[in-house]
Length: 235
Image 1 (cartoon, rainbow, N blue to C red):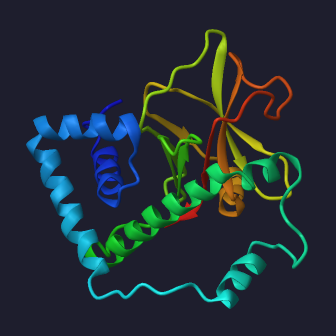
Image 2: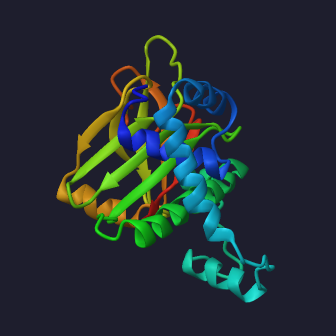
């Protein structure tokens, strides 16, 4: 992982301050910060910017009607639950709901920061933090619609069995997963996005990584385990 990448350093520092960087990734980041004065400054900056947002905010319980609105906007009827097929299996997992909390919190904090402190920056982007069931962040996926690029940041290096590969999928509820190609467990990647994929990303709910044969899925759909998932959020 290239810890000198400015965007990755900012993202990891923000996630560290929010408390959403877990396990070995957090320990490794702390060791790095001990030896990197500039990184400690970035962490301190995020602590000041994000910490001030909560001042004076009184916690309240979410009203029942708000949950009903969320339920409706997700497209579920009063009796319908997204519990079938590949998407449903992911959506209903505890892992994804934990990931949803993490990603939405991170995205909202980034959005507030961009609006308050950097109004000239372009925020027409979609992000997804792919995590394991143990909430260990593995990849940060950023889709930049303006520049038509998808950047895959390595948050925590993963191992892959010999003869296997990680394949990235974009998923919209009710549709079949769409492959975005193979991704590396060791280095950052920048992938071009076609006009068609740009439009599909706007509608996607989830990104996921499956374990496939070395050349990718032979069927055009996930065939192996899906150990990493993350909700797609616009910032």
